[in-house]
Length: 258
Image 1 (tube, rainbow, N blue to C red):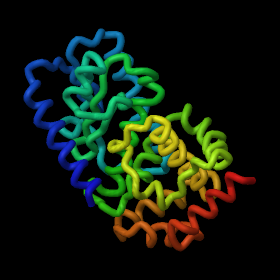
Image 2 (image 1 turned 135 degrees about the horizontal axis):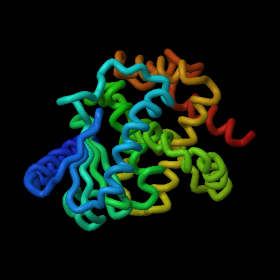
Image 3 (image 1 turned 45 degrees about the vertical axis):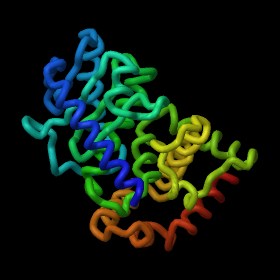
Image 4 (image 1 turned 90 degrees about the horizontal axis):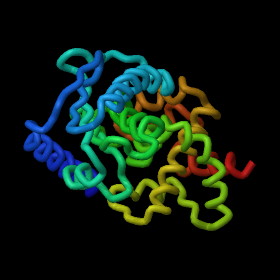
């Protein structure tokens, strides 16, 4: 509950500060996006337009989702690009390690120009947040933070490729965190970068396990039941051979040890 309240407060701060800066933004419109920017060079904005449109289709396909709500005209998503990291952090209040943030209910992404690995990591991650929440429900409190972050991070090829090896190493080093531990964590409230990195890589590893072991169809069924039943364990049990997170955690760890 505290995490939900914290995120609502963050959203309120986001909107207030962005609206206060309304006169500073220039706009670039594409089929599915309105890109708001300050002094970013046109080459970056052009590349952002192209990659955003590319991810619009590929992320939904990657998750197995069928679109019913298309981002067109007044329903387009918004991307706000600050000039630099300092401006982004000041406006959003995000932790120092953050290079982007999404407000799924507002279908908005906040970032800054030339953030490290922006097109390979930040953009697909934040778009993953919106597309996932659009499917399971924006106000669905049954969705744990680790699952949503896992879905978003799963869109980043660089993290997907490195996740299992990193997590296996954490088991050896006794830094591994099980799903029950992940369920009590919120990376936005964490300052330890190594622990934050492990959190994200573990969530990717769990998603990768579910996709490889059971396929996209089961994941879609799980998300549908999560949306309809609004109960995590019942959604798991309805789509997978696990009654709860304890059994899921055991199967995931066993797969890492093989």
